[in-house]
Image (tube, rainbow over all chains, first blue to last red; front, side, top):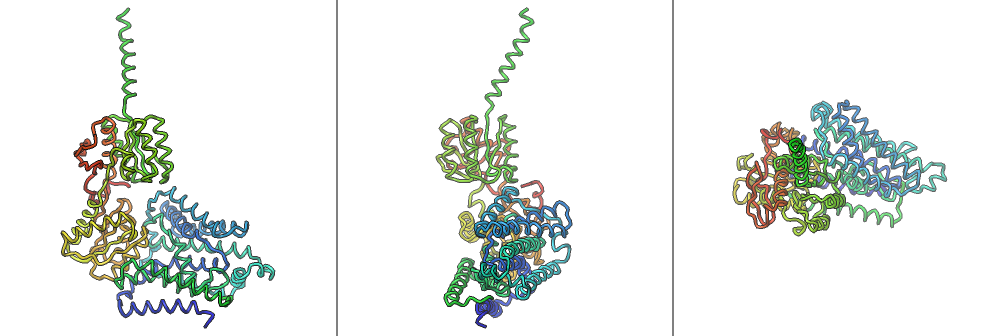
Length: 312
Length: 325
């Protein structure tokens, strides 16, 4: 139990909010709006899972928001140019993987600090996109939305994909050698190298995977509305990093669980609709989110001082 | 002999006259914030029409992307070129003032439009919309859509953005003054993100079952709210209006999800700016003027050194097809 204290703590806070809503504002639990809100958060969960892997591996990627925008706009333009939706989705994943590979190559290959590398790619991608689109929306052909399915089926599919990514990666982290290697490299790259692992490969792989997942997430978002705003994904990096940290992943690497990340993201995501339903002014939103992040970081600091650095 | 020379001479004379006439053609330099932007392309179209009517030359140049430093560079080039009058949509209020003052010292007349610089760096500002005009029009259109009755919510960019707060102030004043049957139940921010506006609108509709109207006062929120209403199956039951661009809202306006989109007419903004620039250059428009006549568009009010484009324009199902920006 102690080992998962952080994850359990976050889950408890989330459940408390959900219980309050059930008592005070039961309208929150209407099926259709709730499914819509969850489908809107599903892409963020996919990026957060990828980010968790990168952070467990003791790196960080602050360019995901820009990658998300570029993948969205590129896939949108391809769909608008008449590409079949499936190919546009594949292109989004491929472009995301490409940027992930570039970040990974710069960090792992040249040994540059990931925060600097991804800051550079973040700015480059965002400004390049601004230059190319000038903020103009991309209008998508009708068949892109919900992949031509009904709205309910489309949203359900999006939720299933996000669930599959979460469960699949959680299983891989726990049960595959490659998953354990991420923890090992994140805990102590030098020790991992001496033990025969190849830390650079692991680092490259987590960036590549995060890029591909960001592309997938962009596609999952793209099919939920008939037009793409080039600003889409702006601020996404902060949201996913916050979700990962709140969810109990150690920012110093080597520790974390994906179910904690799920709880962290849901906690962050529930605040805004909860305030709307509880008729609390929106001014409180950022303050509450900030307080939750602060609490997470402080408990993390206390845990480290207490010396309890487990492998997850 | 002289009789044969005469036509030649007169031809020469004609040519010389034509050349001097071409030299004296007024040159108006018009700068957008970003030249590829559809909004400013529409401004340019209006300005070109005015230039044609007035028989002046129009230069249209600006940064490819919004870039305050590049704007200064272009002003410097125009000074070297010796244009007669410059009209700028300033990316940075203070940043461009020095270059514009320099132009004024060289005898070039300077105006601003769309976004102002410091007052001493230009003679007039062509003001596309006052906060009162926008706030009142938004509230009036919103009330019209739900017949003056019911609960409504506002989606803004951020709770702290200066212009949004200004508009809110006038919306609330108008509400208190004219629409006792309406009630503002919530104000939610969307960080200028269409997708976030969609989530906010979804939550608003489930939290307030009697909601009759969503008023989106930042442009990405208008299509975001409309998509949420459509996905919730509440088209007609919950109306949408807001401040936005025609292209981003066209599909929702045509489908009847969004009742009205409010913005100024950018083509008219360009037309008025070009007319005002020429009038200033020709000393026909001077400080203290109360009205200004701009060709086919008629008279405009001048308040201090602001030339007012007037009431915001309302895009509806009937007219939205005519606009492309």
